[in-house]
Amino acid sequence: MKKFLKKIFYRISLITILIGSLIIFPNPARAASVSDSTPGTVASAADAGTGCTNAATTDWATMTNTTVDDGVNYATYGGSFFDVSEKSEEFQLSNFGIAIPDGSTIDGVQVTINRKAGTANDVFDFNVSLTKTAGVQVGNNKADTATAYTTSDVTVTYGTGSTDKWGTTWSEAEIEASGFGVVICVQTDAGGNNEVASVDYVNVTVHYTSPTSIPTVSTDAETNVTAGEATLNGNISATGGENATVRGFAWGTSATLSNANTATTTETGDFGTGAFSTRIQTLFAGVVYYYRAYAVNSVGTSTSATIEQLTAGTDTSVTRKLRLFQSYTIKLRNGRIILHQK
Image 1 (cartoon, rainbow, N blue to C red):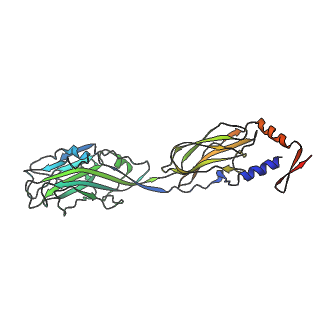
Image 2: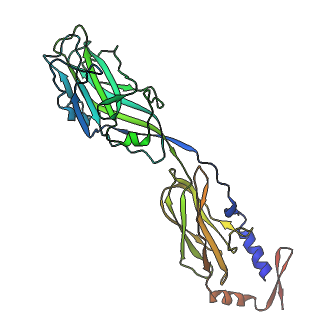
Image 3: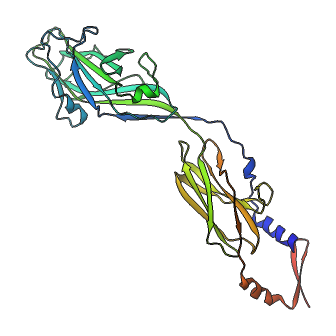
């Protein structure tokens, strides 16, 4: 009878894996980006070192308007004092509150500015730079000094693609620091006369590569156990940076789940963190089973560190069903069940 049960169990478990010996592949990296257009700190200041000074010593006005992209309210610089071949003070925006996943590598930074001028053809960029300390420029000046501002809103992106670091290096900590930000300075040409430069919003996009790992999985106690059924329970507590595409359980009669009688359940989809379960309906009464949760993402397969044990209950209905065969003897011959009447 034991051999008979083993053969039946083996046939039920045609799809098997040796879950304990799965290969874990090396961690790949995952490219991503994060953007923010709400600087926590704005300021206006003259900087003789960069040439961003004005004889009128006038600050940028209504600077907090840049925290809202509405096409109506602007931070502005200029007026009757902003005339021929002059420079503005620096418009300093920082403390963007950008968060980068731990262990990430910074690939590049792009800055998008929506701006216009009071009159056409006389206002230009003079300095567009990044900062690690608020107001202190680092790396390359990305100003487009050849293109005049128009009287309509124009959105301009500074930084060529996702790998432009503006001539310097960046760490996760520097991007997340309150001093990370942008400095803007404008100028007038020989035709300047009572010019006004207006900035609607400034958006910063940071491109980074985050490390990705296998999910973190645990196995929980079984529930609703009967003679032939049980609910297996598990939990994904961390995705490893990428949702699982497969989750399930390895289960069988081996305490290490390492023999050919180990079966698996498989559920495919897009799975974040959270509990999951599977109902097994092919257990034998009184038999001890073992099970362990697993989950798979593009990095590899993660298995729970613990293996749970369950014992299928007893069911008197099985005895009643067997009474149907009281006048027969049951034999297994060449893989076939043979009934002989007594």
